[in-house]
Length: 289
Ligand code: PAF
Image (cartoon, rainbow, N blue to C red; front, side, top):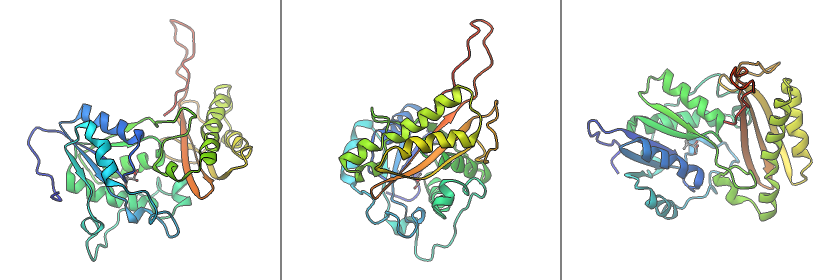
């Protein structure tokens, strides 16, 4: 496929950037892109620049035939699956860093990760020139980094973020779930249980980030197959670390944990309760991002 999509005037282009191994989470983005846009492009590219040394770049699941079959039900216009040299030609030496937002939590755990994400998205955005780009809330920090990238580099793109898709157990869908043994897959449901428990505690009035994080930690530590790497509580829009959860701002609780050799991430966003409705006198409940 040509590096640059020739634009047909008046047609909106929606890009769903993926690393393949497509699951229902990706497909929910594709469905929304199909609903919103005239032309839908799904990119499938396992981006070496966002993996650190010793991470799973080499074994990341790759099955373009299977991905193409899955996409055949969605009337996608283009699948863009470039070889590495097309994105990173010989001598490639320009990288994009989104300072600040990229630094805590996932950025601290995976140095250089968001630089790789911002760089590949810059290349994809410039190559495909989408009007809309679709991302999942499961990568909460990534969505903030992407929004900032788009704003700061003046891309004329609307970033659309859709809710995390979960298995019935609560486990967030992820291409990396394919690595899990049956036992670990069952055990990994603890992540969402832990986040949900923190949400309950928050709804009961807890506003200490430390105690919210402890709630998550205690749940996860009760699962012997889980090894928690981090749990962080931050402002859901700025990623600032909080001393106290503000009543009027959404808060992100994000975590990474290992099950055997598999590293998973998950998060929830706690929305501040809206003020009492005069009509009902009831409090609106905080939702999940
Ligand atoms: O979320 C992902 O799958 C990747 O980080 C992305 C956005 C496709 C960039 O490689």
